[in-house]
Structures are given as C-alpha cells and as structure tokens.
Length: 172
Image (cartoon, rainbow, N blue to C red; front, side, top):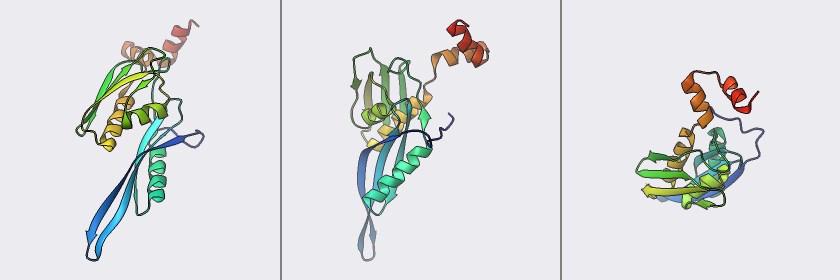
C-alpha cells in the first residue's frame, strides 16, 4: 500500500495508551514512557504510532510524528467499509463488518479509536484474543490496509485499465 504525504492534510491525534516502563540500573529504577497515538483526517486516512521517551509529552510527540509517516488510505462506501475483513497481529485478532447507515460505531478501546479517526461512521467490530491495546490497534490498521476498493479489484481482475473501468461505471 502506498504511503500518503501528511503535509497538506488536517490531521487529528487521539491518544490511546500511555505505559510507564522501568529499567533497573545500578542506582535504582529508571522510568520511561511509551505512548500509542492514532492520527487521521476523518476522510479515510489513518495511522498509528508508538513513541518512547523519558517524559510523557515527548513520547506523545514522537508517536504522532511516527504515525504521520505511516498514513494509509481506507476505502469507504457510504460511511462504512465495503466488506467483512479479519486480521491478526500477535495474539490480537480483529473482525470488522460493514453496518447499515445509522448503526454507529460498535467498537471498543483501540478499535474504536482507529475507526473513528479514519472517519468510518457505521461499523460492527469484535476484538478477539489478546486485549493488548498496541496489538489490537495494529491488527485494526492491518485489516483496514488490506481492504480493497471493490470496483478497482474487479477492474484489475478483468485486466482493464483503472481509468476505463471508472469511466464505464459513470456512463461516459
């Protein structure tokens, strides 16, 4: 999947998790923080970033910067995803199902943060296996990145160039 330039996009950040980790050294414990941040424009662009630093604000800033470099485009159809998809990352498994208009976002935790930041308005989700927020978010991003636009997929399967397939669909 091709990366998207985040320079001209208006992105919103959503902090999902802050985790304090300790490293034991000769003089005692040395604490640092990891921050999991979701970045998206609400129009189908979304990414997640994990930043590590000695202070919380710096970890959040790093996570946002990392996420901006990893943006992906999510194909949407009428405010939902085009078809059911399932993805696994580590021990976390995520199931995403399209929903009828007006259903809303039926999701919890990390899945909800990713889906809302992407701009999906109607979706049914189920998080299976591990509840580790980092792996759940990565599984959700993986599932969304595997989605293909149905018209593009059909056009590629038939061997037609993409432009002709879209023109034929619009009746030109």
